[in-house]
Image (cartoon, rainbow, N blue to C red; front, side, top):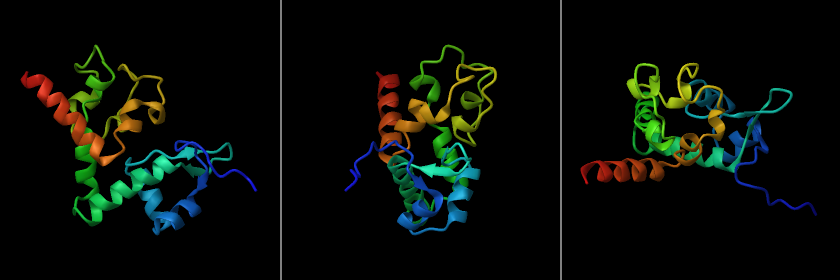
Length: 150
């Protein structure tokens, strides 16, 4: 039998399988991607693929919407508050960084042509990878807040 163990971040689930595992529609997954809540992997043939980590992120999103009654716009605002400039130790957080100036969408949806993230793949960024888990967002904000107070 084939070994079914694979890394959590390896994209192996096609969109239809991911939807079935999560008990949601393919349309809903596409909408989350369109809204920028998730960044799917794309195969060479441009098919969407999801990893275990992506599925966990989607579960977090679904819980926020269904249990906590947070809208998609609300989730995007919360994600926009993640201080990516601190996490990535950006030196330039002035007028050229939309993530620093805006609070309506996460940093991975910002134009990156004039800031420290230019040319980087957001799927590989610590901000997207680490803070896709609901508890990690709050942990980081609390940690940064405590450091500012001290």
